[in-house]
Image (tube, rainbow, N blue to C red; front, side, top):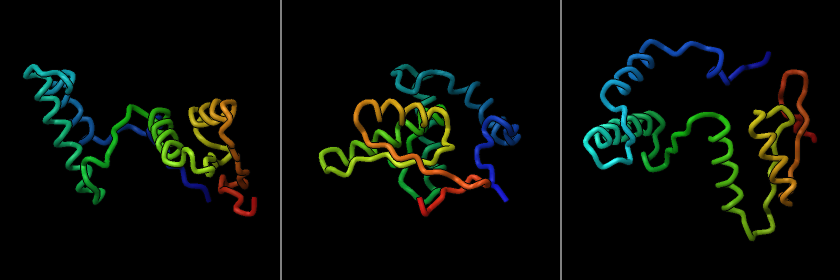
Length: 132
């Protein structure tokens, strides 16, 4: 049995999500970094959303990074992990052979820059071959 976890491109959003997005587009359409009132309204709504998600996840709002999609999220996570290991002699990227195309492209670029990259094979169900 396989489990598909990336429903972003294949599943319609829940009605509650559509309603929240429409509300945000109506009242908080400006850049949240702007100093004018529409921007500050957007900043408040974003802060409220961040707080609600953090409460749901059991973390601090400052620990959340909202991104526009998988490629940006993957790049952010990989670059942060590599930055944390820079200079330790332990810098390596390990990923499965069936990752998101944006992550595979990043892995190829990092490998060309000298970062060791290991691509682990998967079985017929897409599970990483732990023996590898």
